[in-house]
Image 1: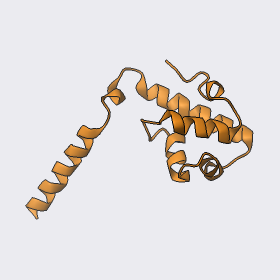
Image 2 (image 1 turned 135 degrees about the vertical axis):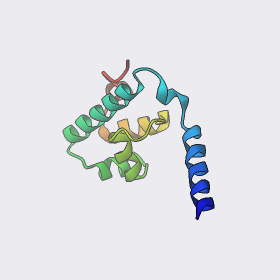
Image 3 (image 1 turned 90 degrees about the vertical axis):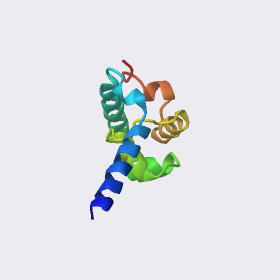
Image 4 (image 1 turned 180 degrees about the horizontal axis):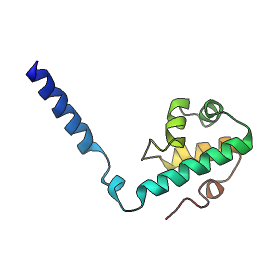
Length: 100
């Protein structure tokens, strides 16, 4: 039983060490929150569900929901481009007001 707990603790430490150091950058969490708010705002204006945006952006709807809920830190440019297209906006419109 103790070895099982040790393995779980080691696995948790290994997973934590794989997270991007950018997450610890000053202001990063507020940028993630602003992106999430902006995505939600644009999605609601478009009258779409999270699932619809995910499918239209050609990403897993659960991944889109995680991005919109600020649970994903590393969103690729390709993913953001797909989301912008799905929401009917340009990439610059998508990111308006999000930066530091």
